[in-house]
Length: 158
Image (cartoon, rainbow, N blue to C red):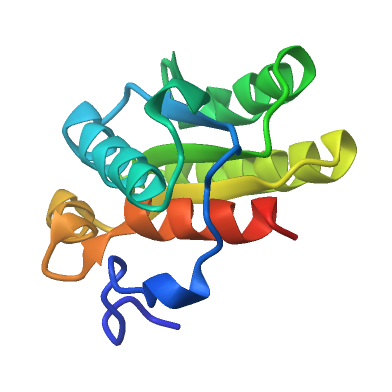
């Protein structure tokens, strides 16, 4: 569903499983940190609001979105986690670099999830410009970090 039609921060709390006794990893890209830090805050706040203890949330930073899948894979091997959330922001530029990075990150995250048999949540913004990214990290259409955390809670309960 287009985010134009949905607020990314809206969810029915009664439909979200408790995060009590669950542990989550969050891998965050440092690239476009103004955006990714807002996504991280939305994700952490949502996990805590739904019963996850703050000590059960492990945050790991990586340089850019391209490094998200590797870090998620390493976290899945080294820590007992119920789900991993990948947060990043890839903004369209003037070259095809955007296409290659966005595709590699999406496929990489999916492959880690399948290979490591752990839910790895795609919380990566792929926008045309900075304004669209700002709208999706707490602006007009909500916060993709909140949506990613809700997804992680649901998948951890699967």
